[in-house]
Image 1: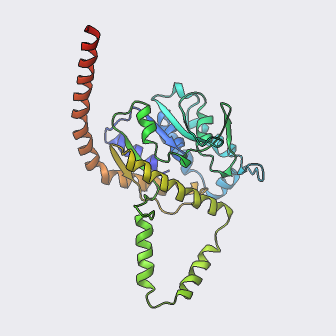
Image 2: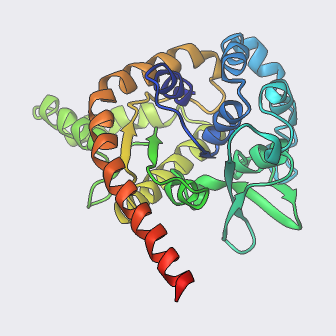
Image 3: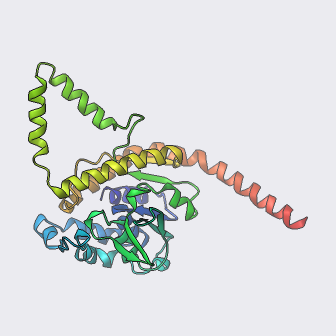
Length: 297
């Protein structure tokens, strides 16, 4: 939900978005923005308490997943729009074809279907059947969909990432710092005591937490590789804390994090936009001139 704060600050800064693409929770927030209902969506999410969140969990186990995922999405559906083609700006949600492994860009039809498919974390939510495909979480193939935004026509892509990016050896900076801290604090401790402390932490994890953390590790690895190979015009890295998959009662906290990170990054973003726009305009003029010459030949 930190993406809500990002979008709010961009709007307040006068930076208008001409299209939006999202994966998983980003697909949900993106739909609310594309529908022009972000404020209402935020209010609905911030109204959730732990007890209200539990009431939105519609158990499906053991049929393909733990939850149907319908009750929760129906709660926010009024704030997401109904038909993608009728949204105020071009929109796409990213999902994964479970059978083929292909990335699926959902740019038409039901907003509900697109978002429900994109958030279907395997093992937690049942896969979503749409268009003859069995669709699951888009984070399996494209967690930060820069390429999708470009496919929608974006010339300058502002990417918002809430996953810990991985360095060359596969460890995130945050994880590396954490390991270094453990090492420095535990120089006088035995390996056995460190192991026991780790076991105490690991024993607290349940099935949902294991699936959730595993999916985030996978998504972070994929995001790092894709952002390296296809960098956006500007990357907003949001330092999101460890939040559980069902902790929507922390929406206000996450929105505030998104706002602070975006406000801090605004000078750099403005500079990147200022340097990119003249190049884009020159390229567009050259393309128009080339097209005109071609039509005369």
